Image (cartoon, rainbow, N blue to C red; front, side, top):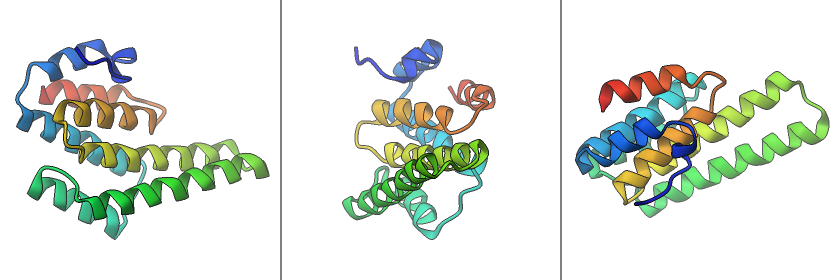
Length: 142
């Protein structure tokens, strides 16, 4: 069995993910990423296009993966800059959440549907201070 970072946060969801179809795992991955994007108030044409591609093809194209990875790296740089320049904790948390929300979307488009779902849920869970609504949603979908 594959170990996941999500297992350190919610073993029940990991177990339930193992027992559903690949198509259900993909739907859950997309739902987790979408939840994280909305929770972090992210809207960007690159993100919308990535969601469209995952919904249509079931995974991200290499070009879309690259665009999302570049956005994650940009947000990570902003995060470290905020840390270095003494930005407010609220600003720091906001950038951190956005980076993890985009990362959730990046994982949601991965080829292995179990890993895609588990990692998208994990990244979504660390994108906000309150993971309970996400875990409630995931439980309802599984």
